Image (cartoon, rainbow, N blue to C red; front, side):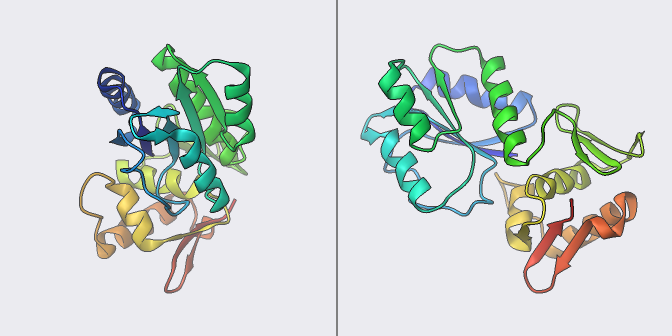
Length: 218
């Protein structure tokens, strides 16, 4: 999963990127409102970590703008502003969670998992789709209780599609999300991984929407 981190504190930003990397998550770190995307597709990021007090403006403005644009990506506010009015404004303004600094990075990672789990409409850490289970924390998937032998990219494809069941993920977006910090995976390579994944989990679970992309069938 790819995380958008908007935080101006250098030490905290570096620490968060290291913590995210240790969890197998990639991240893009920005420090100012002006650098933040004015808009983005719902498939661009798995989660946003948003500081409210930035050098050139307020994170509230970004939060409200994105929600007005119907951007539904989970957003976790991280801030030193602990007052009740701030917490209410953040949550009522569209934040999925509100974490007050200082915080333990382990708790923040847990909260990221929780909001992403709710976004994927899953009630527990084990994502269940009939006889297929995905365990994001352990980076594995099981079919009928037996662990699947998935390559890292096959697992990543499965996780990215399963985060949005019954939603078409464009092929180009999926290719970029597999390598968020580098060049997108080329389409022929993506199709090979997709073919292998379908063979292992059942071809019926991933539909191809011709000319658009792929959709996970929950």
